[in-house]
Every structure is written in C-alpha cells, then in structure tokens.
Image: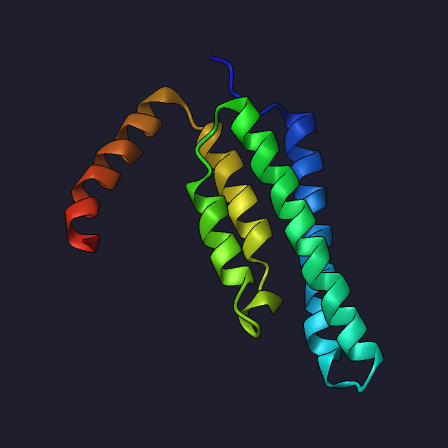
Length: 120
C-alpha cells in the first residue's frame, strides 16, 4: 500500500501551513495597532493566499481531493476567523485521510455517503 503523500511532502506541507497560519494570526492580533498592524494584516493575508495556492496546486498535481482545503480558504477569508489555524487543520486532515489503510478508507467513504443526504 502506497499513499499519494509521502512523509517528506507531508512535513513540508505542514511547515508551509503552520507558517502561513502563524503570520495570519499575528496579523489579525496586531490589526489594532495603527499603521504597523494594518501592514501585518496585509502581509498575513497575502501569505495565506500564496500558501493556499501552493498547497492547492501541489495536492491537485498529486491527485488528492482538495475539498477540505477549499473549506479552509473560505474560513481564512472571514476577517476575524482567519486567526484560526484552518489551513493547518485542513492540511493535516488531508494528509491523515490520504494515509489511512484501505479498510478504514472504505468505512470513511460509507460514513460520508450516509451523512451527505443529511447535510443537504
């Protein structure tokens, strides 16, 4: 059994996501400062967009589902909620989901099919 995301790629993806979330968090917390805070917020916002695009491209090229990453992008677009580490959480969730053994993957897919009609 081979996974689509190996350990080295997973570490690099997590480092990118944690870094972007840290910069965005500092930017959001520093936003109350007059000039420097707004610059920090802008740098955090731009960093988040660039890292999100890199991860989206990377995962798409690996043939991995990026639905969780799209959800994190929506959370990161909301001004106060972008202080939460949504990008890191989505990246870790994608890595875990891709590295599950086959029997657990089938169980997760069955659970997703059962809950899909409820969420509509």
